[in-house]
Structure formats: structure tokens, C-alpha cells
Image (tube, rainbow, N blue to C red; front, side, top):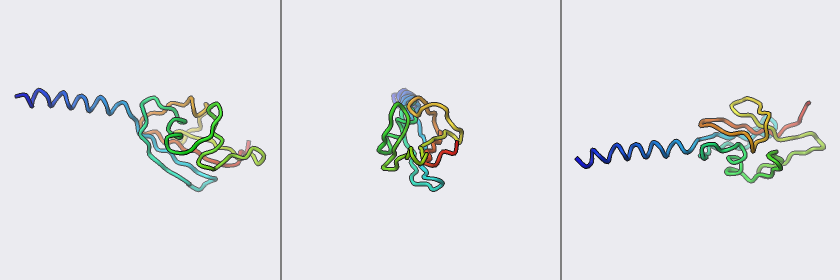
Length: 114
């Protein structure tokens, strides 16, 4: 009888703790070549920058990424890091963009043609 009382409580606890984390996949590309890919567990409400810094060594200023694992942008050559979430361009700095479970973040280091 005691087992029946404790089993539902344990299941509820496991379910509640699993909703506190999300899984996000990050892909890094230099031009069109993939240089890294990781799926990370993050706290619910984490930003793009939070996950990026968990997986790689990152240099940023005010949410704008300038270097990831030694791959630097080059202002003179107009080569910059840009990112998308779920293949959609994001118009906010990486430290402000909140992530959801199963999001796919892609960072690309390439020439800006604008």
C-alpha cells in the first residue's frame, strides 16, 4: 500500500524537474562549412549567448559575438558572426534572444554583403 502512495509522487517530481531544462542544438559554420555542432542542456529561459558560452570559448561585447573558439570576425574584410534561430534571422543581440526547447541555433562566420 505504501508503494502505491509514493509512486505517483515520484513521477510528479521527475516530470516537474524535466521542465526546468531545455535542449538546444548549436551549429557553427565558417562560410558554408560546418566547423562544430553540439546539443546542450540549458536552463529554461536561457539566452543564445548562455548556451554558446557553455559550449565554446566566446568573446562578445554587449551581446554581439566577435569570436568563437579562435574564429574571429574581421571588420576590415567585412566578415562577421551572424546567427539564426530555427533558420530565421534574428534582429536582436544574442544576449537578449531567449531560447525554447528543441530550438536550433546556427552561427555563421561569413562576408557581409549589405
